[in-house]
Image (cartoon, rainbow, N blue to C red; front, top):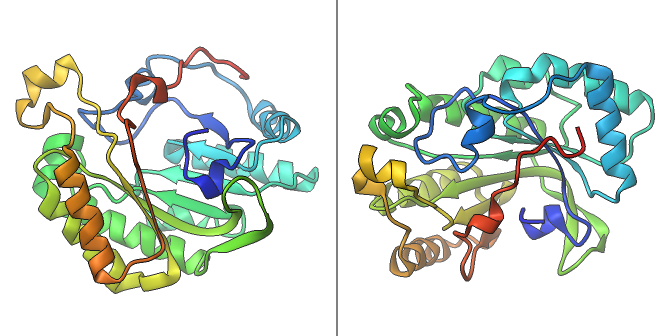
Length: 264
C-alpha cells in the first residue's frame, strides 16, 4: 500500500520481492532479502501462478522488486502469464544498476518502470552502495526505460485520489543526510533530460539503524524537514509539476515488510 498513489491506489500493488541484490547499500531497509539471507526457491511456473494470485486479490499491478539478477526467469514467467491472459500491468522496481541490453530484453513485457536514481557522484555510489560507475549505468538504464515507455499513460477511472498508471516511468530519488546538493543535481539532470515525459518521486524516508552509526556515522540520522523542503522547493522552482512528494512521518519501521514468504 505504500507505493506512489497512482501505483497503489486503494487495492494496493501486487509486490513480489526477489532475494539478492547486485548493490550493497549500507542503509538498505530490506537487508533480510537484499543480502540473500531469506527467501524460498520457486520455479517459473510457480512465479507465473503468483502473478495470477495477486491479480485475483485485486492488485493493481505486478510489482517486481529487486528482480534485476533474475531477469531471464522473470521474462519467461511474464510471457507465460501474458499467454494465459493476465490483465494487469507489470512494473519493474529497480535500482537502475542494470545493463541496457538486459532492459532491451524486457521490451514489450514491462509496462511501468520504477527506477531509482540514487547518486550522481560515483564516490558516494562506491562508499554507500558498492556500485562503481553507478551514475553512468543509471543514466543509460533510465534512458532505455524512457525509450520503451516514453509517455505516462493513466487509466480512465480513478482509484483513490487519482487514476492508476498503466504505462510510463517514475524515477525515484531518496534524499540522504548531507546530500542535498547531489539530490538537486539529480533533479536538475532528470528535468533537463526528460522534462514532462516522466514523473519524479522525491522521498524523505531514509531510515538509519545502529549498524550504520558504527560504519558510516556521517549519514546515521534522518533527513531534516528543512533539507527535504529545500529539495521540493528546488524542484518546484525548476518548473517541475509531475512529481510525488512525501508528507508526515514516512521514515517508520511500519513501512518495512515482514519477509516471511507469505504468498510464495
